[in-house]
View 1: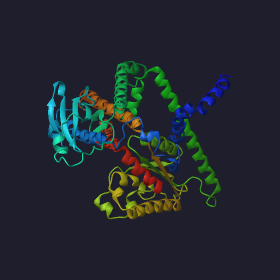
View 2: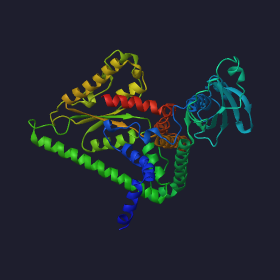
View 3: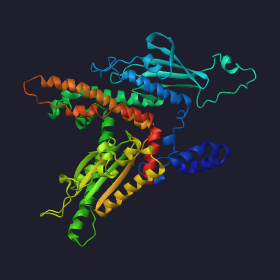
View 4: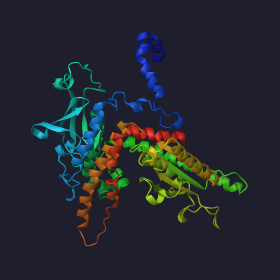
Length: 491
């Protein structure tokens, strides 16, 4: 009844001159938004999810300079200046030295580490204000930055040196003042840094609450002790969350597991049906499966890929993992481009040949990154259009060859916006700090006896889950998304 009463007035307003102006952007955003799952041909790089119209244009002059400043300050933050990663061998990099290499000259200083620098740009002057912004994050202190075009500088000597020369206005792009934060070589807008810091604090708060509840949990469940890897750490953090949030996470987890079991059940049914049909029937469940997960850093490849991998394992597939996070070596460059990427049947433990007891084993192989990564993180994006076309054709030929060998080549491209990436970075930074604390915790447990029965491999893997390349990728979001999209749309 309420809907029927309101609808005529809403339609009348939307049809008015004012309503059309106010609602045009709403319908445009709804039409061009990114869907949770969609075909690559429907990906719109002009969507608000990608463009972020509420942020400064990423091609603005001050934004480009701010990234240079953040890269220089990243050398200061990650050098041997007393932070938590100092191993006693790193050379100390001073702030003014790092900025001097980028062309900034210090012209002032104040209390609390505040400093002012000048930078000549397009016949004008840019002022850079830098101050530490505590508290630290994983023992690395962020910097608060303000960049502005100095309008009070007397530039008559440059512009009026020749009284007959015309005075031309300086063409500047973007805002006149820009503020943000520099952390580990990346420049964050205030909004993105707030996303990172809020998630970081939430994770540490849950960790502290879980530690307080540990004696009670150990008494009731007889499963005490600190976590030693990422899965046990996630379970441990659930105990520190509020009851409402914990119940919500349990419901979401159960829904995902229901989908996994449904997919596994469907695959098992196809395998049984295929076995009844015999060799003369059509292939319903492929002998080999390649799950190729590609996309931006911190876009959910690991978590989503784990669900697909779990469905395959539950249905009887033996699943292996391959990570191609590094560019090809010099030896691999001497061979055809696609040869370095493994397929089911190319190695002894992934053999697709038939055995005496069954019709051959069903094998799954997960690619964590792959050929598209060579374009983004290698130098293949610098090739000529003709050479790129050859690489695309090699990839398409590989896909065709997989189909001929009864191998399903499933390609998933993951994209997300910078808000989500900032949140993920905050979560991983918190997990890294927890891993350091848990290492101290386990070392205390190990000191109880002579037998060394404590392993730190799981905690080391947590710390290695985030590295400086993740922050570099955040600054290169538009570039990486463009190169990734060009590859997937051409293959």
